[in-house]
Amino acid sequence: MKNNDEPTRAKDFILRENCPQRRIHYILNGKWTSMVLYALSHGTMRTGQLERALPGVSKKMLTQTLREVEASGLVRRNVFDVVPPKVEYSLTELGQTFVEPLRALYDWAETNSSALDELDRNQAGSQAG
Image (cartoon, rainbow, N blue to C red):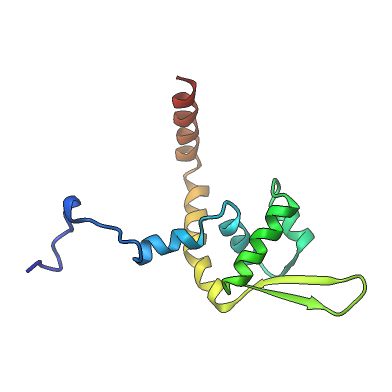
């Protein structure tokens, strides 16, 4: 029997298909998913506000990402019965639970931008060679 304090050996390490560590990647697999959730963690936004908050996202990709996160229950879409139409997006309680680790990752990225710069250089060097 294995002692709970004993570290897992690399040869015994398995990330099974249904384990939480892999399931998180299924949820956050889209390029824009984590960025949309992070942007909405700053408050309710309309589509145009999200577009401005995420330079480089196309309307098509933003719409697709919003539909996906809404369908998964991470984001709430509120449609107002006014002319012109008004739609706002906000995080659900479930969506809020995903923001805490995203904030930690985004904070790490800001603090460690030099590591990201080095990664970019390494990747550029491997593609050039």
